[in-house]
Length: 318
Image (cartoon, rainbow, N blue to C red; front, top):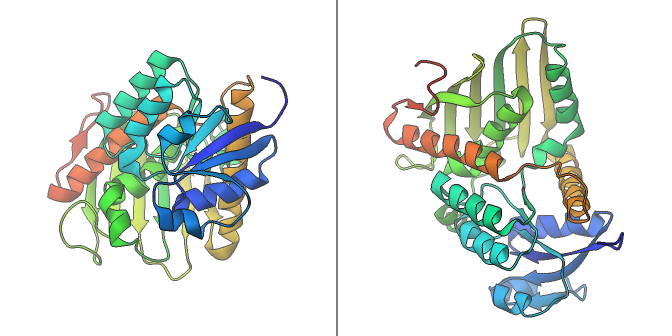
């Protein structure tokens, strides 16, 4: 492919899709080729910027005016869309978590592997400069042996009932970010985990509004994930790392200024994806990362149901 802008079609124009649309418009080396959104009212609410609009993926595929797609549809539609675009040999940037269960992520990875297409997963934290610097410090041994990693994700307010119906629950919707972040920062996998719900929100099922995950990693470090959906400071994320030679607390997304961090990371993610489509090495998360994070998150959801710990790896005994 030449150095011409990569023409990316956006699939799904809901809340997250509109956020990605803003990032695509800001990204260098990218142009928005088309938007696919099956709901007429959502299509009508989009800004009038002259984009080609399609009501179906089939209509998009009938043309040849795009190079790649960004999948921002609801999580329970990810697998079907990945299969469709893999069969059409279309490079994909897919929002996390690539399904609502590990089995779906595994099937998506198999489809991508058979087709031999580019597949990047939207774990945008990997493009936050503060987190990239923290990862380099950990890898370089500046914090010594890592004892514990604590990830926090607290949203300003709970999601709608419609969103809940498609999200797979708080562990699949939210914890996958913290679990992928922990793996990426430390280079360690989750060996076993347990989970507990907090007060507030639904009293039963996989989708409480407050949850805590406790995990042990394959390298021996402990990890915690704190999740909540009502926070007075707005949408906030931070991480703490305890090591034998140092401690770091990185509040990389905090309130309104954090929205810029989120936007900038999505822009960098889109630019990295476009570079990969043009032939550069892939920098973002891939299918195996989606499987690892979703496998752990699915078991965390199970643990929220009954309070029993789950093992993912025999490397560290329970």
